[in-house]
Image 1 (cartoon, rainbow, N blue to C red):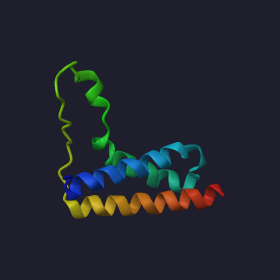
Image 2: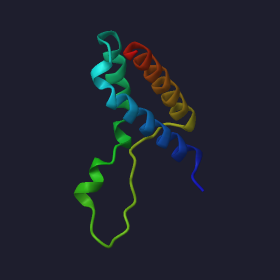
Image 3: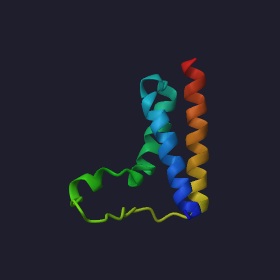
Image 4: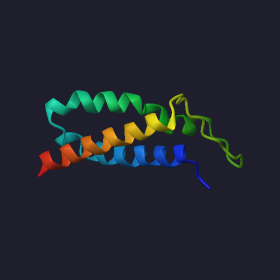
Length: 91
C-alpha cells in the first residue's frame, strides 16, 4: 500500500508532465514560477536510475527530498494552479 508521500510524489510527477508537454504555451509572466517549481521537484525525476541500473537486480529509487507530507501537498497545489493557468492561457 503506497504511503501518502508516495501518492503525492506521483501527483507531482503527473502534473509536472502535463505542464512540460505544454511548456511552449507557458506565458512569460508564469515562466519564473514554472522554473521555480521545476527546480523544487527535480529530486523526484528518475534520470539517475538509467545510469545505475543492472539487469536482473531490483532497484530502489532514492529520493533526496527532506520535506514533509504537508510541503508535498503544497507543491501539488501550486503545480495544479500553474497547470490551470497555463491551460486557460492556451485556450
